[in-house]
Length: 357
Image (cartoon, rainbow, N blue to C red; front, top):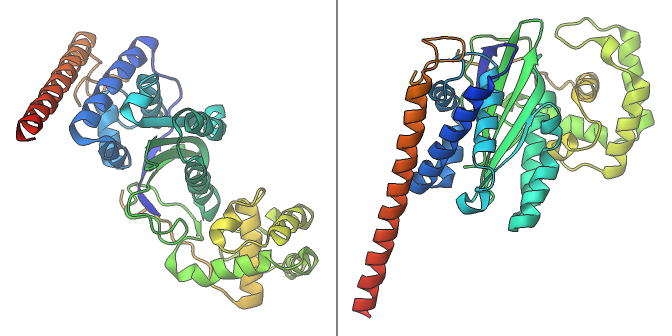
C-alpha cells in the first residue's frame, strides 16, 4: 500500500468562521467539479493524496497556511461542497473529525447501497489505513480525524490526522490506492515533517520476521502466550525503547488473544483487523516475539523531511472576501464553458460518426 506522505502541523484551536467556510465550500465545489471535467476523478484523489498539493489547496481556500485545522476544514469543505453531486461526479467522501470519523463505515455503506459500489474493499481500506497509523506505527500521535474520498470504480485516497498534545503538534497521513502493493511493509513513499518522535514501527522491511512471529503468537493458545507475557513482567527487562512494562495487562490481553486464536489470523493485515488489537496488544506481541524468537524491533520514525486569498489568521494577509467571491464566480463560468465545450465535441463526434456510417 502506498502512503504518499505525512505532514506535521502545530495544533491550533478554534474553527473557520461561517462566512469563510461558506465560501470555502463554494470554491471547493467548483474546483473539484472543474478538475473532474478536465482531468478525471482519479486525478482528483491522486492530488488530494499529495501532502504538498493538499496544503496549497488549503492556502487557496483561505485557511491558515500551517495549522492543524487545515486538514479537518479543507476535507470538510470538499465533502460538503460536492454533497448532492456525488453520483454526477462519480466521487464520494466519507468520515471527518472525531464522531464523524467513527461514522465512516455507515457513510460508505450508504453510498454503496445507493450507487452500487464495492463496499467491502472500501471498508477494508478505511479500517486498515487507520489501524496502520494508530497501531502499527506508534509515533505518539493519536488519530482523531479520518476521511476517505473514493471513486465509483473503487479507487480511493485517505487523509487522516493524529495529535500529540505534549508536543503541541498534529501529524497528517496521506494514503492512495493507486499502485497498491502492501498495507504493512514500507507503505511510506514520502513523509514530510519537521518533527521526529520515538517510534515503534511494525512496517519497516527489516521487521518482517517480527510481523510473522506476531501472527504465529496470535494463533497460539492464549494461556501459553500469557505465561510468556507474565515472564516479561517478572524479568523487569531493561527498557531500551518506548515500551513500558506497566502498559502490559495480561488479563486484558487474554481476551484479545482469545479472539485472534479463534479467528486463526493468516497474516499481519488480518491481525490488525481483529477487534481489540491495538497499540498495546501489538507491543505485548512484539516483546513476546523478541523474547521467544529473538526477532528485532524497529524504532525508525517514517518521517524523513521536514497564497491566493489570504488566510484566516491574517497570514500572509486577511482574506479578501470580494476577491474570493470573484474567484468563485470565475470558476463557475469556467465549469459552464467546459461543459458546453465538451457537449459540442460530443455532438461533433456524433455527426462525424453518422456521416461515416
